[in-house]
Amino acid sequence: MALSQDILAELAEIAPGSPLAQARLTREAATRHAQGSYETLFSQQDADFALDERFAVAAKVAKWHNADALAAHYAGFGLADPTSVRLTPALTFARLLTFSPVQATPGAINALNLAGWSKEGIVTLAQLIAFVSFQSRLIVGLRLLNDKPVPASDAPVVAGLWHTVPLTKNGKAAPVEFTQLELGWEPWLAPKPLAEFTPDEQAILAKFGHTDSDYFRLLGRNLPVLEQRTLTDKGIFYTSGGLSRAERELAAAVTSKINGCIYCASVHARKASQLSKDNAAVERLLAVEPGQSLSSGQSPRWQAGIDFAAALSVIPPAVTPGHLAELERQGLDTLAQLDLVQSAAFFAWANRLMLTLGEPSLPCMHSGSRYGSLL
Image 1: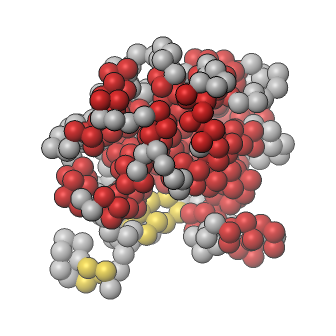
Image 2: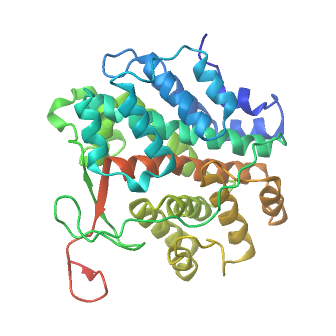
């Protein structure tokens, strides 16, 4: 078998020249680099994570998302033995990232170390699991926009649990509630030292502003995948027209509430608040307790967007034609709908990396509010 030339169009059955195909052309960078991420992840030849192992993990993650056609696509390449000493802990890690990434601890990474996984292999494994989580949701969302059937799901569409332990692994103060504060992030796996990147690799990191970030130098252990992922991110969030930037950031915050990612929510809720000039509405979203609906008390347009993003973000996705009809009632055209799908789906990827490769910490502060004020 060969990798698909456009895996998303193929599995979402998007006809050339259709309104959805035109919208994807308008979002050319996101379309091209989502495909580029797929091609990079499933063509690299290295000893840290063999291709037959990658296809085995990808097929399983897609199956857990009820993405049967995607699972069959990956299984068609031939699979490694899932009971091998290496793949057994990898599939355990994959199940954790898929269903409950907020429950990850450093112990999950230690189990992979004990099974012989290198730092580079662990980063690629995490990227692959998180990417297929993104890809599965894109296919569901695109099929819905394309008026194609999508799998039914009885997953409750409610806010998830989040970390409430007040200290990080290294003893720093940790956030125990959602916030718009600027947080730190501590890796559980050593980032790659900047000096170990080649000059060309350092230039790639610098181009995206990643040089001084532990998170991105950790993901830089597989720099080609990081580069494609970053370009996908920019193509989704930093493009003109379609859904407003504030609503794209809102979708990211919604997905982060579903997955319990306090760090991602802090960044994107803050951006949504700044861009929308509606801090009260954003704070209302962040204050939602586990098990509760995320859209209560919001404006009709934000309610429709929140409900759609939340339904796309649960496992397996539970978005329906009814969610789409409500977006249309609120005036979202095909391009805006595509922006919402891609914004929410991308944070199925981002949250799973942030939650399973490290943890957030609070900034330095002094007395004042519950978390104090930034110095």
